Image: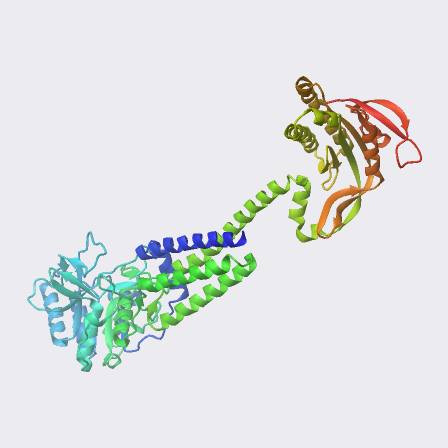
Length: 592
């Protein structure tokens, strides 16, 4: 039975593997998986000192006035920076509309021309964008200085937050009417390579997802990159030499302007767009790329954990199963951390969910299986042993199967059929068995109705105990009520037998109460739960002295049940095994 239960549990876990494998394939719980990766895997590292930010911060707004500023201010910044030949200058500001004063635009464009290494942003209209294979397409780009014929170095600054609002990926290029539009960070990186004489990078060599996005391997949290105030550069407080040979990114650094997002390393703290560009540029500079492990790796983990769950959880105790769950989960997290250090993001949610659900399924299945088995055993065993005894055995386990007993006050009922032998001579053997079973069923039903324990059948007789193994209030009265129920229930049976065979049978019943030894009596390999002692013997003697249809009770029973029982005193009678006679009462009725 245990092997069959384990087999069933293994099938359930196998089906669970298939279900979670499908969920992983369609990435049904992508947000939860991303959050687990953010919490357990992603960590900040040292930021690249070759990158410096010129921040349009609160200090700059206070020094230079309300934003946006006149464009000659930006022209002055570019002239100051270009004096010392920085490796690249990225201006994360949109100049898509002409200034009120055309001279301002001309001054800024001339400064950009003279610097030669300035990257400007473009913005794509992505209405109706949906994830599909191939580069993300757009038909509309917002470009800088549309009135000028110059071919500026530009890159898109579109962001692609996940459903939970976190920026985890960046599109390294878009498709605009068949033309490739690289990202702003990529263009800055190209300028850096050109400045340093490095070979031109190849976009196709990077680990991109199906829609050409790169997982951002954040090196810093908000505020980590070295930054200086825009106004300090304009005022000369920060010397131009500070920027020599470095990548300079200029952008908003205050919540008031609104260019901020949330990232995996600090999901509650805003990171400005220029800082996100800095992180992407650092990924490109150092080749520190992240990529999601293929689905096959996730499915392999699910299958391996499913096998471990099917073999381990179905055979171990709940406590040992929890230990196995902890070991497997810890091992997988360690493996995921190792893969992360090598640039691969393993799915955490689906394999760990499989482990937890596998354990719970095995636990629930084992519980249900044991419950059903308990009910089956109880149902079968109760046909041979009183239900109260079965419950006690199941509750007590091995300890309840030890030989021995304890003294306890009980009421004992003996019942025997009178006239059964003549009836058995008049009826066929099969009919005799049927009649006997019908009478004994009545006996058992009445005993159980009043909380008694059916100790045993002895041929055409039966013995019952009240107040053992479970406590029973008014056990004396309950035993007399059970006896009266047997007497009344036998009347229709007697009439039917009289009509069919011309013979009938009646019960003789004896009831006594007192102290006896209750417990498992017999051999270690075959025992009965029963009672022994003078109390039991006296009840048996009363039953043997009872006439057909008569219920005899002892003085002790009478004293405890007389307020609810109508009786006739029969005086003292001599019974076998006792030197002195005992007072006996005949039960004439029991009040409701």
